[in-house]
Length: 285
Image (cartoon, rainbow, N blue to C red):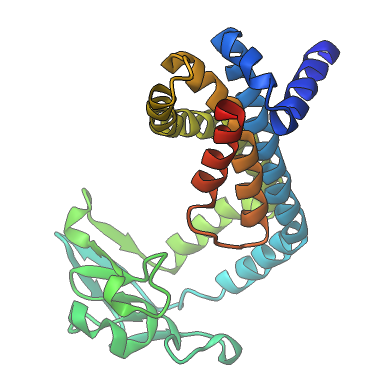
């Protein structure tokens, strides 16, 4: 491990600063450059994973209190006298309509005043007028899509006709469901911890591989351009040599792109421009 790290560090320093090193890289096995590039990608993937983990760690203390508060409110959410039936894709209730479950005053916004409205005489197009997160009509459930925010034109629609079985829900059934869910809800942080660890691990493993493949595919085009100029200027490198040199020349573009991304700066073409400048210096001079 120590030897591999020493080799990588040596290659990194020379790839960044020593143009003569690229002549050595051109003659080295392809796997040498592949390992080098993967370690570069892995390093920055780990940095991103650390940022994600830090973000989760700062958010984590608020998860369980929020879930506990939701469960407390959920116990009184379902009205005692409400019974919901969905038969053959049609919704019916035993209470006057529209039946409204409002948000707390402190949670209401200009676009949303209610959590749920049930009105079997309403149409899907009436959704914005009810200012509710969920509208239940006679044959459909309408709710915001994840990207919609205040855009009511991009909401999701669930048609009751897609249900395989008829459904009947009342207060007793709701309470039984809540009782089953409660033990898990009060361990929410434990579940989110497991999910966070699995996600971070998957992001590092699969994210680094997909990033590497993306860079390698992009380098096919960039190296092809360099190889054409190599032929024009009669530098004598075949495509495989140009490609291997490009795998090291891409180091600076990767670093520049990551720094720009970190500071949320957009510089169009920075990646390609830095690559061509550096590879030109490394191969042609």
